[in-house]
Length: 168
Image (cartoon, rainbow, N blue to C red):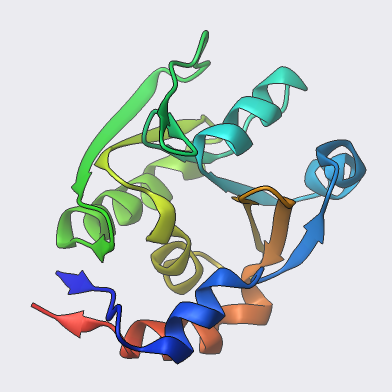
């Protein structure tokens, strides 16, 4: 398991910045989302916004919480729901393995949802490291909007950020 080093101000400040292009309005990103070869969404608000627009990621990672408030999705259009345990501030082996499993299985073209018991915020980093370069990842930047990133642009940065976590 990797634990975020809460005393490492460099990593904390990097993680607070958008890792990709910030769209204050979700709708402004729709054309780029539609043109994505492979799409991963991280976070309940992002997943919910996608499904409201009838867009379905190859992989959606949720924890049923939006800004510390419980959230239940009215409809999850996925026949495949995987589960992972991941306490806040960590990236567990279980989360790594479940993301890896979803990446393998989702090649079929069907949507896979990973429901995280705990917190999914840091799941963006293992997604960047494990996904193919042409993958697009979406996640919410609290109170700012939607972040859209291309994996090919961030593999090195994700590896560097992960290297600053504490291995337990």
